[in-house]
Image (cartoon, rainbow, N blue to C red; front, side, top):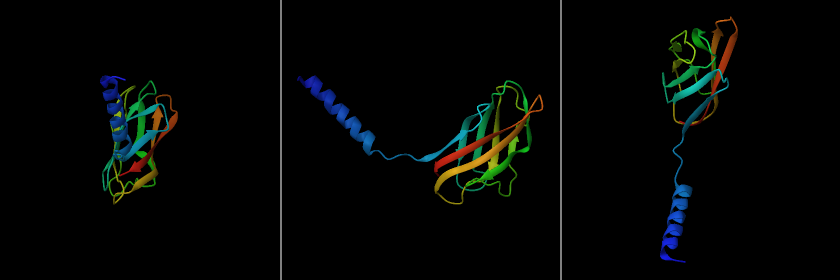
Length: 138
């Protein structure tokens, strides 16, 4: 074995050790239950007005969101004193909209199965929901 191969082996071993011993950065990850409402971004923080979701309307046509757009919350997501808001309330096909003004937990903790349900109506009058589920450490 030449010195070149030895350096490659040492570099690979050091890389593996760094990967195995590095600490996880944590954070909360969220996912949408509905492929017609694609979750593009989520923010999950501690306290009032610290939880927000950006979704994309992938239904193929404009939709109308219910008045405050979030029909139910559970786990470590609450509506708190501020009513949840969505903007805009009638996202066009492929447009994004933001669900905001939801409250996160009062202190740092591990989140497991926190949900927010977003309700909408299609142009044809069909109703739909997207359940956003979040897990992780905040």
